[in-house]
Image 1 (cartoon, rainbow, N blue to C red):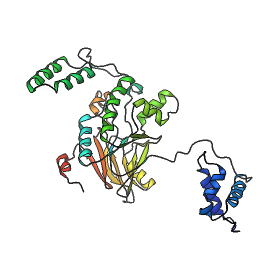
Image 2: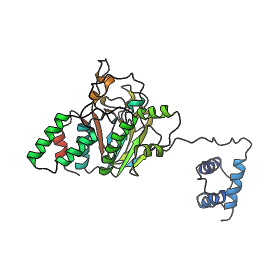
Image 3: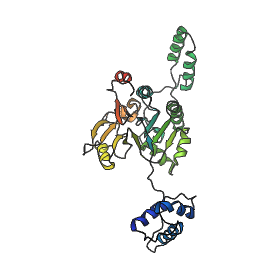
Image 4: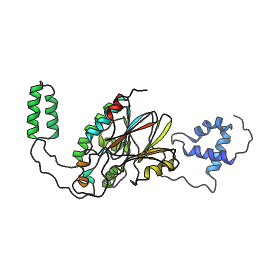
Length: 347
């Protein structure tokens, strides 16, 4: 392409440098300049010379060697949002209701909105008092017997389950390996139901980082949890979902204050579903244009010693989750009329 003889404007120079800053390392400078020839309506040589001049300007500073955190997870379509499951202390009954509704509504995407695992063994809380139970069978042995019982006749099933109930389940020793073992089984069940699952980082995952005293690559976290390619993890405490043309921010913020969801909605100019606080609240930002909700949690409060063994003035944990469908939020709580939602016809 011939040189047009046009002077480079300040805006064009800024656009050129901005494009170059995003150049993948495997693309050569020559290839890069050729690729911009058409968009800038200039010859390859004109672009190369201007780029060299700009890069070697006496006022130009060297690029920072550190990464930019500007690529959070983005999901398109409808999704089930499950906040604060905190396995292995999850509330299975409530989560199963959410999963059944998602299946009925043909929702094939899920967002785990932080604190997927509790990491109790890495907690800073004081040790807990426990009910002694050294007898009984392990959870795995009990599960195997129950599966076998399903193959028997009704009378034999009833007799077998009665025996299992008398034996009881043994309390297995706490520890990170036990937590991971339980969680890995549940995560595999989620993989069976959904085509794509985004994993938002939460403060409980931060317990793992503090214990390791080092940065953790998202792919290493996937290996630790033994989760497959359906899962996406990025080093962000939030992700985005665009459904029905509406952009939602799925948040696990640092603050758990009552006004946080509304503040974030106003700051980032989009609707917000917030985890972390374990509370339920629905409001808007100050403009009234953006939805802002704290959607509760999927952890069973009765299984958390710090919340149940000693009375506190803290608000109770509120069970909650949400489905974003065609851009519209359906917040699910203990007050949900499940029968009505299951009977709704799909659009």
